[in-house]
Length: 316
Image (cartoon, rainbow, N blue to C red; front, side, top):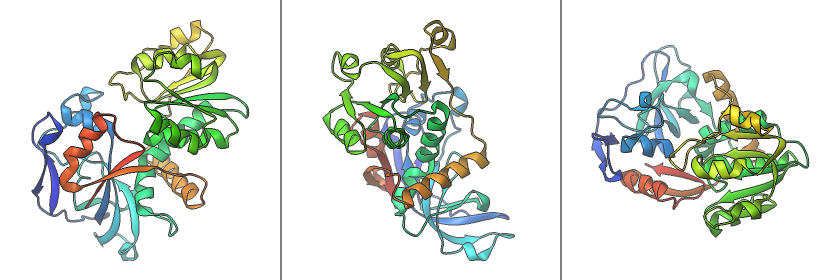
Protein backbone atom coordinates (compact mmCIF):
# COMPACT_ATOMS: atom_id res chain seq x y z
CA UNK A 1 0.00 0.00 0.00
CA UNK A 2 0.99 3.65 -0.30
CA UNK A 3 2.02 5.53 2.80
CA UNK A 4 3.93 8.67 3.71
CA UNK A 5 7.25 7.73 5.27
CA UNK A 6 9.41 10.05 7.35
CA UNK A 7 13.03 8.89 7.30
CA UNK A 8 14.80 11.95 8.72
CA UNK A 9 13.70 14.92 10.80
CA UNK A 10 13.70 18.18 8.90
CA UNK A 11 11.77 20.18 6.28
CA UNK A 12 8.29 19.26 5.08
CA UNK A 13 9.75 18.06 1.78
CA UNK A 14 11.04 15.04 3.69
CA UNK A 15 7.53 13.57 3.71
CA UNK A 16 7.48 11.22 0.72
CA UNK A 17 5.10 8.50 -0.41
CA UNK A 18 6.50 4.99 -0.55
CA UNK A 19 5.26 1.43 -0.74
CA UNK A 20 4.99 -0.36 2.60
CA UNK A 21 3.50 -3.73 3.58
CA UNK A 22 -0.24 -3.84 4.11
CA UNK A 23 -1.25 -4.14 7.77
CA UNK A 24 -3.02 -7.31 8.85
CA UNK A 25 -5.61 -7.12 11.62
CA UNK A 26 -4.70 -9.30 14.57
CA UNK A 27 -7.01 -10.58 17.29
CA UNK A 28 -9.29 -7.80 18.51
CA UNK A 29 -8.34 -5.53 15.61
CA UNK A 30 -10.04 -4.13 12.52
CA UNK A 31 -8.55 -3.13 9.17
CA UNK A 32 -9.73 0.29 7.98
CA UNK A 33 -9.53 1.34 4.34
CA UNK A 34 -8.55 4.96 4.91
CA UNK A 35 -10.21 7.73 2.93
CA UNK A 36 -9.10 10.76 4.95
CA UNK A 37 -6.33 11.44 7.46
CA UNK A 38 -6.04 14.33 9.89
CA UNK A 39 -2.99 16.61 9.83
CA UNK A 40 -2.10 18.52 13.01
CA UNK A 41 0.29 21.26 14.04
CA UNK A 42 1.97 18.93 16.53
CA UNK A 43 2.75 16.53 13.68
CA UNK A 44 4.62 19.32 11.89
CA UNK A 45 6.69 19.90 15.03
CA UNK A 46 7.52 16.22 15.38
CA UNK A 47 8.47 15.98 11.70
CA UNK A 48 10.79 18.97 12.07
CA UNK A 49 12.50 17.36 15.05
CA UNK A 50 11.06 19.87 17.51
CA UNK A 51 8.33 17.99 19.40
CA UNK A 52 6.61 19.78 22.29
CA UNK A 53 8.06 17.13 24.62
CA UNK A 54 11.23 15.08 23.97
CA UNK A 55 9.33 11.87 24.68
CA UNK A 56 7.21 12.54 21.59
CA UNK A 57 10.19 12.12 19.24
CA UNK A 58 9.64 8.83 17.37
CA UNK A 59 12.18 6.28 16.22
CA UNK A 60 12.58 6.64 12.45
CA UNK A 61 11.54 5.64 9.89
CA UNK A 62 7.88 6.15 10.68
CA UNK A 63 4.53 6.68 8.98
CA UNK A 64 3.11 9.81 10.67
CA UNK A 65 -0.55 10.42 11.46
CA UNK A 66 -2.87 9.63 14.33
CA UNK A 67 -6.45 10.26 13.16
CA UNK A 68 -8.20 8.67 10.19
CA UNK A 69 -11.59 8.00 8.71
CA UNK A 70 -12.69 5.31 6.30
CA UNK A 71 -14.51 2.01 5.93
CA UNK A 72 -13.85 -1.21 7.83
CA UNK A 73 -12.45 -3.68 5.28
CA UNK A 74 -11.76 -6.71 7.48
CA UNK A 75 -11.63 -7.80 11.11
CA UNK A 76 -9.37 -10.03 13.14
CA UNK A 77 -10.25 -12.91 15.42
CA UNK A 78 -12.78 -12.12 18.11
CA UNK A 79 -14.23 -9.08 16.34
CA UNK A 80 -17.83 -8.87 15.12
CA UNK A 81 -17.84 -9.32 11.35
CA UNK A 82 -20.83 -6.96 11.16
CA UNK A 83 -18.33 -4.09 11.43
CA UNK A 84 -17.15 -4.73 7.88
CA UNK A 85 -18.45 -2.02 5.54
CA UNK A 86 -19.19 0.53 8.26
CA UNK A 87 -17.89 4.11 8.10
CA UNK A 88 -15.68 4.85 11.07
CA UNK A 89 -13.15 7.26 12.50
CA UNK A 90 -10.35 6.19 14.79
CA UNK A 91 -7.01 7.09 16.26
CA UNK A 92 -4.02 4.92 15.37
CA UNK A 93 -2.01 5.12 18.56
CA UNK A 94 0.27 7.94 17.43
CA UNK A 95 1.51 6.83 14.02
CA UNK A 96 0.49 5.10 10.81
CA UNK A 97 -2.34 7.42 9.77
CA UNK A 98 -0.85 8.84 6.56
CA UNK A 99 -1.53 5.57 4.75
CA UNK A 100 -4.13 3.79 2.66
CA UNK A 101 -4.88 1.24 5.38
CA UNK A 102 -4.52 0.95 9.14
CA UNK A 103 -5.04 -1.89 11.59
CA UNK A 104 -6.38 -0.66 14.93
CA UNK A 105 -8.06 -2.00 18.03
CA UNK A 106 -11.70 -2.59 17.15
CA UNK A 107 -12.80 -0.99 20.43
CA UNK A 108 -11.19 2.27 19.28
CA UNK A 109 -13.55 2.59 16.29
CA UNK A 110 -16.25 5.25 16.36
CA UNK A 111 -19.05 4.75 13.88
CA UNK A 112 -19.91 7.84 11.86
CA UNK A 113 -23.60 8.88 11.94
CA UNK A 114 -25.30 8.42 8.58
CA UNK A 115 -26.10 12.12 8.23
CA UNK A 116 -22.51 13.26 8.83
CA UNK A 117 -19.89 13.61 6.10
CA UNK A 118 -16.78 11.54 6.72
CA UNK A 119 -14.55 14.61 6.34
CA UNK A 120 -16.49 16.37 9.10
CA UNK A 121 -16.18 13.32 11.33
CA UNK A 122 -12.40 13.16 10.88
CA UNK A 123 -12.17 16.89 11.59
CA UNK A 124 -14.01 16.34 14.87
CA UNK A 125 -12.22 13.20 16.02
CA UNK A 126 -9.50 14.99 18.02
CA UNK A 127 -10.50 18.65 17.81
CA UNK A 128 -14.07 17.95 18.91
CA UNK A 129 -13.09 16.12 22.05
CA UNK A 130 -10.50 18.78 22.86
CA UNK A 131 -12.98 21.62 22.46
CA UNK A 132 -15.68 19.90 24.53
CA UNK A 133 -13.24 19.12 27.30
CA UNK A 134 -11.90 22.68 27.39
CA UNK A 135 -15.33 24.24 27.47
CA UNK A 136 -16.36 22.00 30.32
CA UNK A 137 -13.20 22.99 32.21
CA UNK A 138 -13.72 26.77 31.95
CA UNK A 139 -17.53 26.54 32.21
CA UNK A 140 -18.47 29.90 30.66
CA UNK A 141 -21.66 31.40 32.05
CA UNK A 142 -24.33 33.30 30.07
CA UNK A 143 -23.18 36.86 29.49
CA UNK A 144 -19.51 36.23 30.28
CA UNK A 145 -16.91 37.53 27.86
CA UNK A 146 -14.80 34.72 26.40
CA UNK A 147 -11.67 35.38 24.34
CA UNK A 148 -10.65 32.55 21.99
CA UNK A 149 -7.10 32.72 20.62
CA UNK A 150 -6.42 30.94 17.31
CA UNK A 151 -10.14 31.18 16.63
CA UNK A 152 -9.69 30.30 12.96
CA UNK A 153 -8.14 26.90 13.68
CA UNK A 154 -9.72 23.49 14.08
CA UNK A 155 -10.17 23.64 17.86
CA UNK A 156 -10.64 27.41 18.03
CA UNK A 157 -13.49 27.45 15.50
CA UNK A 158 -15.31 24.82 17.57
CA UNK A 159 -14.71 26.72 20.82
CA UNK A 160 -16.27 29.83 19.29
CA UNK A 161 -19.46 27.87 18.61
CA UNK A 162 -19.57 26.05 21.93
CA UNK A 163 -18.97 29.22 23.96
CA UNK A 164 -21.61 31.05 21.94
CA UNK A 165 -24.11 28.25 22.59
CA UNK A 166 -23.32 28.52 26.31
CA UNK A 167 -24.55 32.11 26.15
CA UNK A 168 -21.14 33.78 26.26
CA UNK A 169 -20.13 36.96 24.44
CA UNK A 170 -17.32 35.57 22.28
CA UNK A 171 -14.32 37.63 21.19
CA UNK A 172 -12.37 35.75 18.52
CA UNK A 173 -8.69 36.51 18.03
CA UNK A 174 -6.91 35.24 14.92
CA UNK A 175 -4.42 36.37 12.32
CA UNK A 176 -5.92 38.00 9.25
CA UNK A 177 -9.30 39.14 8.01
CA UNK A 178 -10.24 35.74 6.54
CA UNK A 179 -10.04 33.96 9.88
CA UNK A 180 -11.82 36.79 11.65
CA UNK A 181 -14.67 36.64 9.13
CA UNK A 182 -14.99 32.89 9.71
CA UNK A 183 -15.18 33.40 13.47
CA UNK A 184 -17.96 35.97 13.12
CA UNK A 185 -19.81 33.61 10.79
CA UNK A 186 -19.58 30.93 13.48
CA UNK A 187 -21.06 33.20 16.12
CA UNK A 188 -18.32 35.41 17.57
CA UNK A 189 -19.67 38.79 18.64
CA UNK A 190 -16.37 40.41 17.77
CA UNK A 191 -13.19 39.44 15.92
CA UNK A 192 -9.75 40.98 16.42
CA UNK A 193 -6.56 40.49 14.43
CA UNK A 194 -3.70 39.69 16.79
CA UNK A 195 -1.27 40.31 13.96
CA UNK A 196 -2.05 44.02 14.28
CA UNK A 197 -0.54 46.22 16.99
CA UNK A 198 -3.05 47.27 19.63
CA UNK A 199 -5.27 44.23 19.21
CA UNK A 200 -5.73 43.89 22.98
CA UNK A 201 -7.41 47.30 23.15
CA UNK A 202 -9.89 46.11 20.52
CA UNK A 203 -10.53 42.89 22.43
CA UNK A 204 -11.16 44.59 25.78
CA UNK A 205 -11.53 43.04 29.21
CA UNK A 206 -12.73 39.44 29.33
CA UNK A 207 -13.77 36.87 31.92
CA UNK A 208 -12.26 33.82 30.24
CA UNK A 209 -9.33 33.22 27.88
CA UNK A 210 -8.98 30.03 25.85
CA UNK A 211 -5.43 30.15 24.52
CA UNK A 212 -4.39 27.94 21.63
CA UNK A 213 -1.33 30.03 20.74
CA UNK A 214 0.96 30.37 23.74
CA UNK A 215 4.05 32.59 23.83
CA UNK A 216 3.81 36.41 23.90
CA UNK A 217 0.22 36.40 22.61
CA UNK A 218 -0.85 34.31 25.59
CA UNK A 219 0.85 36.78 27.93
CA UNK A 220 -0.92 39.69 26.23
CA UNK A 221 -4.27 37.90 26.48
CA UNK A 222 -3.72 37.17 30.17
CA UNK A 223 -3.52 40.90 30.85
CA UNK A 224 -7.11 41.20 29.61
CA UNK A 225 -8.60 38.81 32.17
CA UNK A 226 -10.74 40.51 34.79
CA UNK A 227 -10.33 39.88 38.51
CA UNK A 228 -11.88 36.51 39.30
CA UNK A 229 -11.61 35.33 35.69
CA UNK A 230 -10.18 32.12 34.22
CA UNK A 231 -7.24 31.52 31.90
CA UNK A 232 -6.84 28.21 30.08
CA UNK A 233 -3.92 27.50 27.75
CA UNK A 234 -4.14 24.39 25.59
CA UNK A 235 -1.92 24.98 22.56
CA UNK A 236 1.34 26.40 21.31
CA UNK A 237 0.71 27.48 17.73
CA UNK A 238 3.36 30.16 18.29
CA UNK A 239 5.94 27.46 18.96
CA UNK A 240 6.12 28.20 22.70
CA UNK A 241 3.88 27.37 25.64
CA UNK A 242 2.07 30.03 27.62
CA UNK A 243 4.44 31.73 30.09
CA UNK A 244 1.69 32.17 32.69
CA UNK A 245 2.24 30.10 35.84
CA UNK A 246 -0.32 29.29 38.50
CA UNK A 247 1.56 31.55 40.91
CA UNK A 248 1.40 34.50 38.52
CA UNK A 249 -2.28 33.89 37.86
CA UNK A 250 -2.98 33.74 41.59
CA UNK A 251 -1.17 37.04 42.14
CA UNK A 252 -3.58 38.69 39.71
CA UNK A 253 -6.72 37.03 41.09
CA UNK A 254 -7.12 34.79 38.05
CA UNK A 255 -7.72 31.03 38.09
CA UNK A 256 -5.38 29.05 35.85
CA UNK A 257 -7.51 26.25 34.43
CA UNK A 258 -5.74 23.07 33.35
CA UNK A 259 -7.16 21.03 30.51
CA UNK A 260 -8.45 17.61 31.50
CA UNK A 261 -6.11 14.62 31.18
CA UNK A 262 -8.26 12.34 29.05
CA UNK A 263 -8.36 8.59 29.45
CA UNK A 264 -8.93 6.55 26.26
CA UNK A 265 -12.51 5.91 27.36
CA UNK A 266 -13.17 9.59 28.04
CA UNK A 267 -11.55 10.59 24.74
CA UNK A 268 -13.78 8.22 22.82
CA UNK A 269 -16.90 9.41 24.63
CA UNK A 270 -16.14 13.06 23.90
CA UNK A 271 -15.37 12.35 20.24
CA UNK A 272 -18.66 10.49 19.93
CA UNK A 273 -20.45 13.42 21.55
CA UNK A 274 -18.86 15.85 19.08
CA UNK A 275 -19.95 13.70 16.13
CA UNK A 276 -23.48 13.52 17.51
CA UNK A 277 -23.65 17.30 17.91
CA UNK A 278 -22.48 17.80 14.34
CA UNK A 279 -24.94 15.22 13.02
CA UNK A 280 -27.73 17.13 14.80
CA UNK A 281 -26.61 20.40 13.19
CA UNK A 282 -25.43 21.90 16.49
CA UNK A 283 -21.69 21.97 15.76
CA UNK A 284 -19.99 22.82 12.49
CA UNK A 285 -16.46 21.55 11.87
CA UNK A 286 -14.51 23.66 9.38
CA UNK A 287 -12.52 21.64 6.85
CA UNK A 288 -10.49 24.43 5.34
CA UNK A 289 -8.26 22.52 2.95
CA UNK A 290 -7.47 19.01 1.73
CA UNK A 291 -4.32 17.65 0.12
CA UNK A 292 -3.70 14.40 -1.73
CA UNK A 293 -1.55 11.89 0.15
CA UNK A 294 1.38 12.69 -2.15
CA UNK A 295 1.19 16.31 -1.03
CA UNK A 296 1.55 15.65 2.69
CA UNK A 297 4.63 17.86 2.66
CA UNK A 298 2.60 20.71 1.20
CA UNK A 299 -0.01 20.24 3.92
CA UNK A 300 2.67 20.53 6.60
CA UNK A 301 4.21 23.56 4.92
CA UNK A 302 0.83 25.31 4.72
CA UNK A 303 0.18 24.75 8.42
CA UNK A 304 3.64 26.02 9.34
CA UNK A 305 3.12 29.11 7.19
CA UNK A 306 -0.16 29.86 9.04
CA UNK A 307 -1.87 29.69 5.64
CA UNK A 308 -4.57 27.24 6.70
CA UNK A 309 -8.01 27.75 8.15
CA UNK A 310 -9.97 25.23 10.18
CA UNK A 311 -8.92 21.62 9.75
CA UNK A 312 -6.42 20.20 7.24
CA UNK A 313 -6.96 16.70 5.85
CA UNK A 314 -5.15 14.28 3.53
CA UNK A 315 -7.16 12.38 0.94
CA UNK A 316 -6.27 8.93 -0.33
